Picture (cartoon, rainbow, N blue to C red):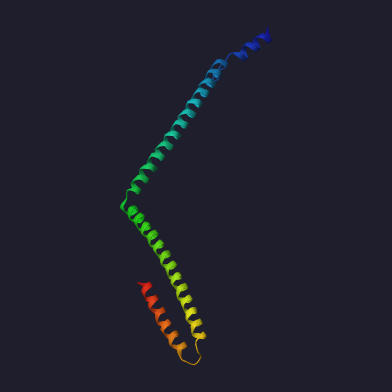
Length: 141
């Protein structure tokens, strides 16, 4: 009888020890609680993400409606307009410069083909320089 008595004693819970059924039950409960915790954490994370997105959208809407933002947009539009105007004026100025240079070459060619020593060369050059200055003044306004 001593062998069978030893086995029965090991299956009987000692004071402060749990039975196999109690251990199994506690493990099931821990697994269930772990699952519930994971679900609750996922739900909380999802809600935090949704709340963050909602707040971001609200802030962006408030900023878009802010008068300073509207003012900045208006200034940016004006800047784009003036950049276009400047580019057009630069093109016009270059075209006028090409025209003036072409006219000057024509005048120089005519002056060199005319009789030397008549003084025609200096008169034409000085009047062309005056015209060139007048053109610069007109395009500046």
